[in-house]
Image 1: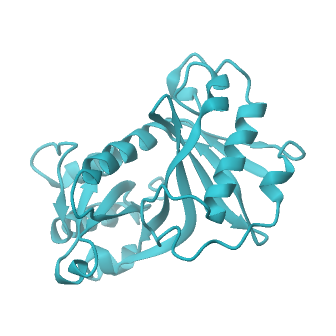
Image 2 (image 1 turned 90 degrees about the vertical axis):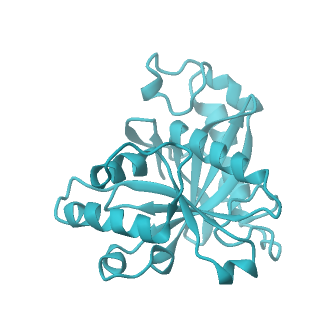
Length: 250
């Protein structure tokens, strides 16, 4: 089995056949109804996806060497000692939604150009901080860990989730990736049924702020939010370049 370890700057794939405990490959239980709402950033327990992430974290804690690389950009997780992972926990989880570039280029709003990827990512919490992500996907009918790392992205997701957790009623959040524009965002929607009466807004994460800055007069602050129309215009500019250049993409 191949698992990808993603640092903040690099992606390293290694074969770990024979190392994963039986818990990862065990037949998943039926997920409780409405335990993990579709696409939502959700900390709830009991889903097959979360069980796979918990098992994956246990595997990493057991098999990673104690000392991570000296350079933080080369570390799988943002910790000084991988033994810290033995006391780590799985936090918020979310499905990754993808932008259909052709739909955006054809003039559709961003929220009507999204589709679920079927891939879920969970924040790894150590010392109360997000130190990385574990990605799980369905393989041969079973949910299992397929990738680990991305500490900077984990920290961003936790920051945005905490910001909106203070609101009442709490809005719905979805993680959105535009691969061709190299842009990650958090979609913020009003709780149902109010969501049907208003359009979502988007919080651009660092990759999106970098990508969108090319089409704007000045830098974008981390606390900024974009309307659907603003994001669509910025993405079209970036997509026209990204679709013609194979170097673009996550």
